[in-house]
Length: 206
Image 1 (cartoon, rainbow, N blue to C red):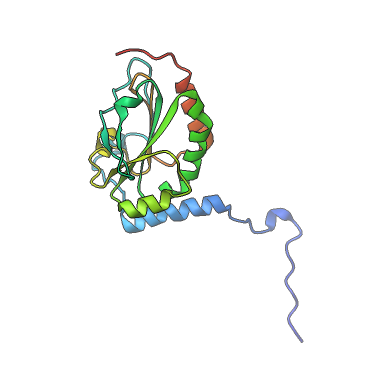
Image 2 (spheres, one colour):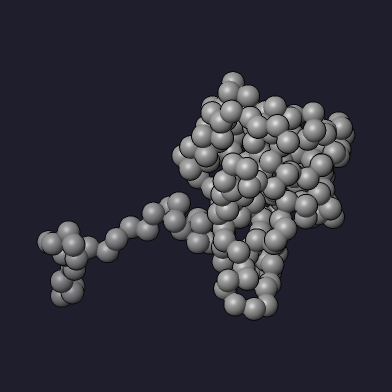
């Protein structure tokens, strides 16, 4: 005689929960970073020394964005000074970084949705191969990225350093000052809300 078949619990609360795919992907991405040690910044001292994953600067107290000029992945020259007057979203990323890859479609979505408001996006591609970075961006991202294999430019945007990285996303106001710095994956709704708020500000000289 075959054993009786198990029946699913009648009470929905007792049924096993399905794992949300986005939560699973995010968890696996974090575990991959921890396992490889890629992109992890180790800090001594207590938690207070680590900074926060979201830093917002009040108008009048914002640090000036560093002067960055370099070659894009496609060999063109890009100078952030030429974008003064725009809100500029800087994303520090690498094709080897799972969280960076996961958030790229959201960044492109926000770029397309805000570019008509005088918003520019610029990536800074770090510790990467030019060919791998170009291959990953193909068909996914339309805004340019500065090629920064030694993280020379990216370091200027992480002082004091974030608790982890990359990815990191920074929003520069129209006057060329850092309005918001995000040292983690950022979702499209959160980023669009921040960008539109900064874009609506009246620029202040100096």
